[in-house]
Length: 90
Image 1 (cartoon, rainbow, N blue to C red):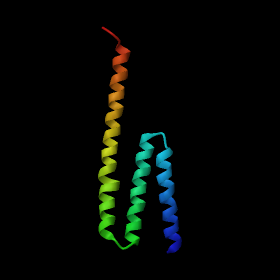
Image 2 (cartoon, rainbow, N blue to C red):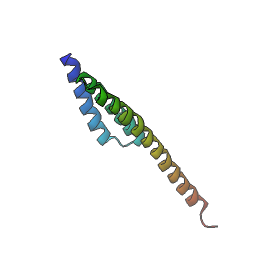
Image 3 (spheres, one colour):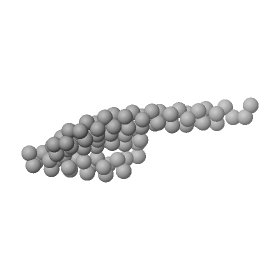
Image 4 (cartoon, helix red, strand yellow):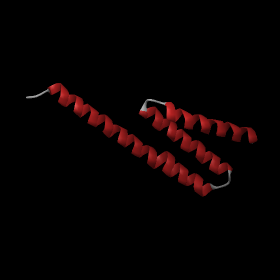
């Protein structure tokens, strides 16, 4: 059991560091989601199911969905700006 906990902690640290150094936003969101899921498992191992459920719902669920929606809107805004620049002055 201790080996599993150590592996989870190492994965947690790797996720935290890789989110900071990843340049692609979509990849960062997926890594953040995996960080939340690993944290959820750690809460379960610490015998705190209420925090685990909250972490799964908020961390991996709602927050990730909001990040995906925001990323989609950012890309749509950038696409509109490029389209306007391509059209040029009328």
